[in-house]
Image 1: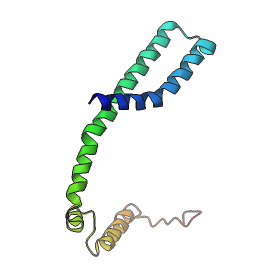
Image 2 (image 1 turned 90 degrees about the horizontal axis):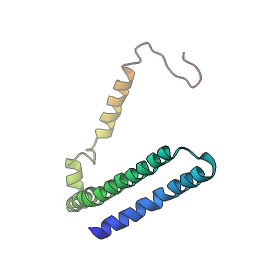
Image 3 (image 1 turned 45 degrees about the vertical axis):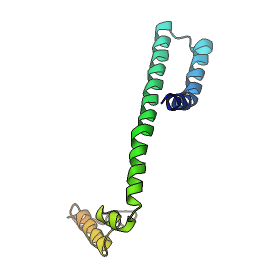
Length: 121
């Protein structure tokens, strides 16, 4: 767990530290904003780092593990399981879906307006 936290913290710092560094340099050289405002920025940056760390650790611990489990289950009998989950459409499903979409899109077009590429006729 510690190695995961350390790895994710390094990833977050690699992503966020350049922005924080540039803003700190600009604060010292050009902007010279009040110290209270700059401390708020530093505190907000720290909280952003903690939030990203929690997000990435949560993704690694839960979501990726769940995805591996689902992939292992689906790899046993892919066609039957995917068809059961409606990932692989049954024969004729595309045609029915196409007619259904055409009907749904024609409902708001009751006035007979047709877009012909340049003007409404």
